[in-house]
Amino acid sequence: DTGGKGGGNTPLQVFDLKYNRLSGTIPESIGDISTNLMKLDLSHNELVGTIPETLGKLLKMESLFLSHNKLHGSIPAQLLHSDMEQLKQIFVH
Image 1: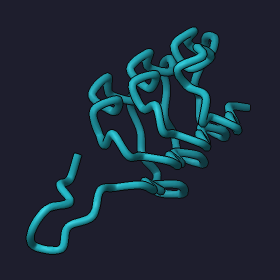
Image 2 (image 1 turned 90 degrees about the horizontal axis):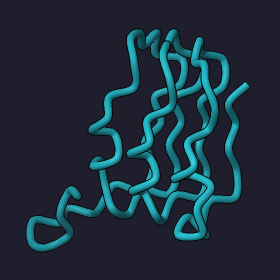
Image 3 (image 1 turned 180 degrees about the vertical axis):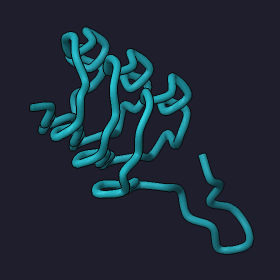
Image 4 (image 1 turned 90 degrees about the vertical axis):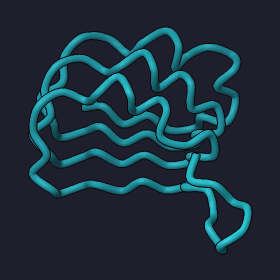
C-alpha cells in the first residue's frame, strides 16, 4: 500500500503498464502492490509463464488485463474465489 496519511499520498488504485515491452514472468510480489488496487493492466507486453496465484490477494480488483502476452496455464483458483467479489473482468487471451 502506498499510504494515504499525511503528505497527500493516495493508495494506488490503477496500475497500467500496457504496451511497455515488459518481458519475463509476472513476479509473485504483484499481489502485494496495493490493497486498494482496482485495475491492473499488463496487456500487450512480452510476459511469459503463468498467472501468479498471489493476484488473488488483490480483493478490490475489478479488472485484470493480461491479454496479448505469452502466458500459459489456467487462471488461478484464487482469482475465481468468492473473496474476489469485485472482479468483473479478466482478459487473458
